[in-house]
Length: 345
Image 1 (cartoon, one colour):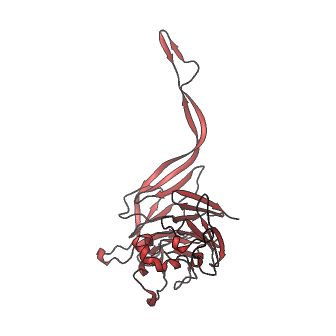
Image 2 (cartoon, rainbow, N blue to C red):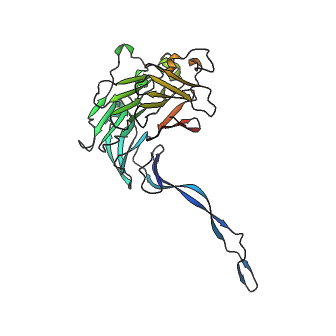
Image 3 (cartoon, rainbow, N blue to C red):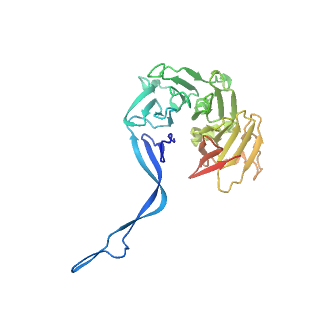
């Protein structure tokens, strides 16, 4: 996550499994030390002493860790989010959400703790957390049971009791062994104006209005045709893949990933699905009017070179990480070992 810019350098907040680091990134001239100099210091009966010469070379990008935030999470960190005040941020793992100050690395405050007294009573874990883009006291976190909980730190220092919960009731007739797995939310994002919430589970994208908790205002089906293949996906662990999502800078579009190195860009009403293959030489590119249905649901077998065949999806090639530029039409997509940047008009 990029921090607010304070000077010519940039501050980047990153995390691995349990340690968070604040990096300072800046451009600087490389210093080159040369011993090939003309002349030197002479002495009677002594060899020439060559004095090294320092010259400036090309401009390079230099990064150094400013602070290390460690020893606050017992489980793997799944998300970090910067506050709108520019001074604090939150980090979440399976059972806790902690709040930090960027200037102090030796202490953090626990603001959500769902760990039960007996771990056998554990029914859900935290999957993601994010601060509201404008209100520094409001944040949300998602769970493996398919709910998004909104909390306000003004109500309590420990936000065990959420202010709102966004959750869609499941149809009892469609419940199966895989229901809880595919309902787990892998990522949540606020829109730039803070009015809407975008959540991604294995099968769908959902848009929630902060003023309506009982159901999402829009559901976009992404992997619905894969419902018949859930047994195979469970056996190869692909059903546990965590796909990210993101709103566009104006809130009118959203992006998320899929298999075969595809990523999808939808309009907020879910009527248009633009999918692209994240590759240097993409074989597939398509724009379609989906009318609320995913393009994948209309894949036709044996139509190579046009729409990909559902039976030939390569589950090892997947786009899990996506991000939309905060002010421009640029999308960053991570596929395999490469990072791709796409721009749109």
